[in-house]
Image (cartoon, rainbow, N blue to C red):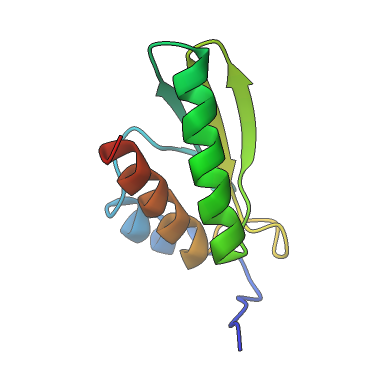
Length: 102
């Protein structure tokens, strides 16, 4: 059984969890996480997007993406509550693991 959070995090909780992820993530309006990942070319950026998309499928928690030449912009928030939850920070950490293993 999947546990679903019913309410978005409060600001103090967001600050607490933000200390667990890279400072390259931005917290936008206490609503979502945003990060731009840089690569050497389009193919590397696409590979990163595809691998992280598989992580999203496995976790049943999906990021929004913008793909361009040599970059991927990721936006993460919990759509069900229209804000940030613990799952968002966990997903951000999983994206960091993917980036660190490439």
